[in-house]
Amino acid sequence: MLIGNHTSMADIMMMLKASKNPFVFVGKKELSKIPIFGFFYKRACILVDRSSASSRTAVYKSAQRRLQQGLSICIFPEGGVPDDTNTVLDEFKDGAFRLAIEHQIPIVSIAFLDNKKRFSYEFFSGSIGKMRAVVLPFLETKGLDAKASTKLKETSREMILKELKNA
Image (cartoon, rainbow, N blue to C red; front, side, top):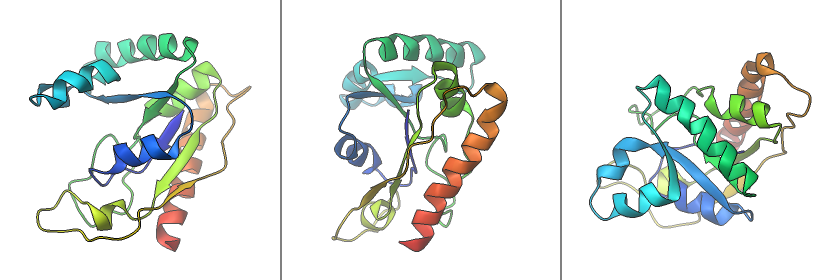
C-alpha cells in the first residue's frame, strides 16, 4: 500500500517515479469527468465516490482483484488537497490503513518534500528546482487486526510530517 502527502498537481507523477512496483491509484470519481484526462483516468484508477458508502465498499473489492494480479495500491490518505494552503499535512482518512491490514500488506509511506513549492494548486505560484521524494521505512501489517488501523494511520502521518518539517 503506497501512501503519500498530497499538496501538488505533481504528486501523482512523483508517485509514479518513486515506486518501482506497478500500482493502481484509488482516486475520486469526480476527476473522471474532466475531458480527455477523465477517459484515461477511469481506466487507470479505482474510482471512489467519497459520499457513497457502497462506492467505498466497492473499492475494497476492486483493490482485492488488483492485489491478486500482483499490483500495489496507491492512496493519498488526506483524501484530497487541503483547501488551506498553509496546511503542511492534513489529517489522514482510514481507508488505506484498513485495506492494508485486511490484505496484510505493508504500508509504504512516501514524503514529497518539494512538490508544493514547485507546482502548487495556487495560480501564479511555484518555482523551478529539485523535487525530492523520501521513501520511509515500511510499516508491516502482518498479524494486525482492524483495531490497529488508527495507530498505523497516526504513525505513518507522523513519519511523513517529520520529513516535511525537516525538509
